[in-house]
Length: 206
Ligand code: PRP
Ligand code: URA
Image (cartoon, rainbow, N blue to C red; front, side, top):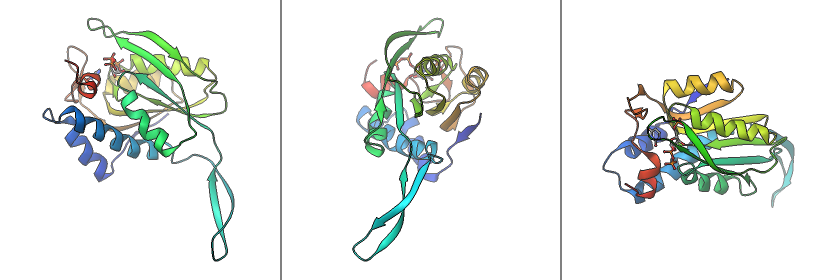
């Protein structure tokens, strides 16, 4: 499916600050939440609505209400920093969790935790801020599909071309929403220029 780079000026503004190596963890967390709100608004722009009416103090107005059940799966750890924004926007969202950790030498992700509700019939978001090799996102969405997901959008902050290609090859039905498509991976398979290690910056771990 498609790649959407969110071009809203506020998203660009927030991205500039979150990339900055001098941004401290407290601000990094705020920026993650604000940027995620913008990305998720874009990711859910085609959510189905039911047309009805609402009584205002003066009369009857046309009203549209969300007709879909949403589910969200953050990829631990870093995706957890994005979860609160989704719950704020969609308070009834179903939440699942997947814990994945890249091996520092091979960059291959290993699953260490998974608790995912039944996703059949739901509009699903997978949250992971960094789409580097795409291995983690590919695995995560594979597990979501095993739980019945048929409509998944991948929401990330920065994507590398290699990760986009890998995810699209394995899950061509998944739309990718990102604030930036960067140049490439570096030799350690970090996104260049990227923003460094998202989880470490979010959780103030070295
Ligand atoms: C980072 C990031 C993604 C993954 C992306 O997680 O948060 O989950 O790497 O890399 P990939 O596209 O090459 O798979 P990491 O494994 O460092 O764990 P963390 O979130 O616990 O820091
Ligand atoms: N994980 C990160 O946190 N950053 C990268 O650039 C790649 C993987």
